[in-house]
Length: 158
Ligand code: HEM
Image 1 (tube, protein in one colour):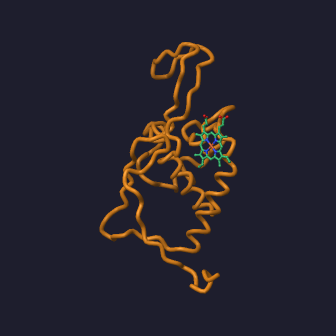
Image 2 (cartoon, rainbow, N blue to C red; image 1 turned 180 degrees about the horizontal axis):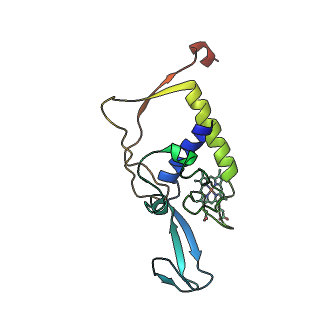
């Protein structure tokens, strides 16, 4: 279960369902470390997708490496205080559904993988993970996989 939780973290890191977090307004003047000056009142959108692939923060950011959450990023969580991983946002308007979402993701993914084997259509071709523009980070090509029951077939009879 610990490894499955790391897989969910890595998935929400590489493919945040809300890649650009909605509007905020700067409450006071500030200057970012990159030198940008942001006057008070400026409307801002936070690009979580970009932050979560920033190589200054994440080693090999484009590789799918759930194990990073046991080593280099073991203290990174979804509480909104580790700003390199913010798929649920941060602060007063962060996602109130985070606990429910994580419980459901772990439960559904765990039950699904326990019950079914999932395979690619072709051993020779990788799954196309290209993303396309959209509010919810849709994939460019719909996912097609082969799903076969792992458990005895009479367990699926009603
Ligand atoms: C993987 C699942 C989910 C993800 C990635 C997600 C992500 C987000 C993000 C990024 C925001 C904006 C946060 C911000 O502006 O800082 C948000 C807001 C919100 N989410 Fe979620 N969410 C998920 C599931 C859920 C669930 C299960 C519920 C409810 C049962 C929920 C209810 C809400 C609500 C009501 C807001 C608006 C909060 C506000 O504006 O004050 N979300 N979510």
